[in-house]
Image 1: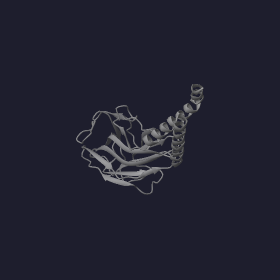
Image 2: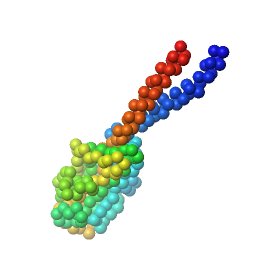
Image 3: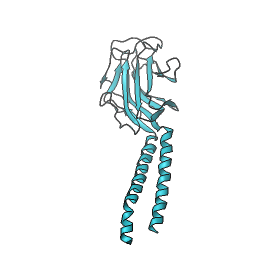
Image 4: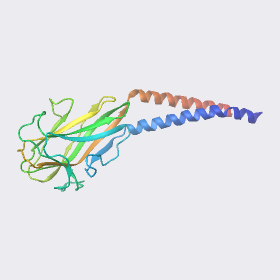
Length: 236
């Protein structure tokens, strides 16, 4: 009879453990999603990121605008700064004149979160090379706000590669909303050939689950604790 009694408890024990395992899986996913990760482009695979995307982020893309020269090639490979990968880079024919967010040359990065996630961007670094006719100012904007820049950097128009960094950022996107930023290259003179190149673009990003996800995890943890206590009482 005792053996039969224990067998009758197996379905309940199985369900308890399934619930606990599911909770642990969701907890692991949520914690991994919230970790800071690096997304990089070295342009070896054209515009596809060279790093894996972190949990909670489903796509990352880069595109060029207002330039007659487009695409990726290995001309004037990156060098001279820590982490320069050489090889391919992205080339532009940057327009001359002052910054105009409608017509100046820029590249745009779009980060798309997974369902139930928002994004936080804390840093952007990239190598940049301007020829004598290339951009002298690099300016960061959010695509949702082109009236006020987030930051800017001075570029030397001397054909040397320089690593630029926009750090200590706190750029966020709402849940299920892509985060899109632009970096403009301005202040140079028009050139029919590539006068601006970028390489080794790196973003520090975290995908943050919606708050309700943590409430669900808390409920699962409580359920698992209660199930464990019940199982111990039955085994006693």
